[in-house]
Image 1 (spheres, rainbow, N blue to C red):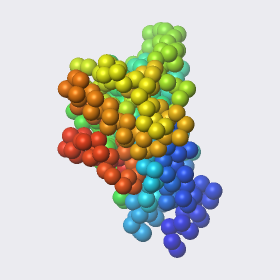
Image 2 (cartoon, one colour):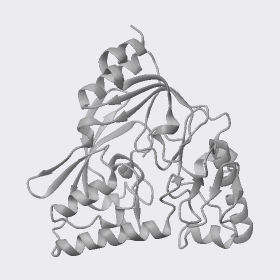
Image 3 (cartoon, one colour):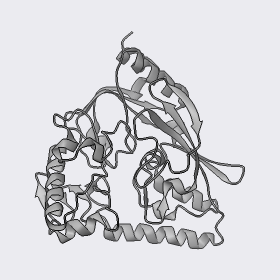
Length: 326
């Protein structure tokens, strides 16, 4: 039995051939996946991964679809996404939160706050999933995903086997984690937070963060979040704005006039529109400020041209192409 027949029998309507990925990304950009599967529990995930391995098909994991650029040419092999049991959050032993990898970060932050915990309020504006946040160690100054993470349950997507891993000191850093090689899929995070002395105050902080995001970010336009990593001691948005690049367009892609470190899809942007605009921004910022910005967004799929090379970046200078997206 071939892969399509195997996965169709296992997943039914949750399996697709030539599935358009633009509908699954926050940028609204991306070609088709050869095969697309939505898995609801660990049994299904193991079976799907092993089926792909038997026929030597590569596996790419798609989260909420933020923080990544999917190639116009699509993704070869099997693309899978987590749903079902992976969207659940559970309070354990009155102190630990066990959170599924497919849980949206804002929902996770509210879940923690409503159970009387504090420490993650700053992440409420991050549009990805908990799994993606762990992979990228998402955060803002003073608040990172790693801060209260005590264990990570992962699936080895080459073997279809699961394990619980405890983060080693120093294994996480700014936009860095041990899970960016593509070997492991984060299916669950276990967090331990301090109790809040003022629950109402925590909820007010969260509401304030959400209002600030509405004012400062292009939340009503299609975007993928911050495009470039903040250089040490500075902010990418400030450098881009000071270079006169707000509003600059290439095709359907535009540097946001509200927040310079966001690129928005004005209607029909292609992946190459975004890449070309990123390249222009990098060149201009380097000319004006002498700073070489590094991409925060991940590049996924069958690009005809290596995106990093297109941006003028050598592979040792930044992370490799993603096999796991937020």
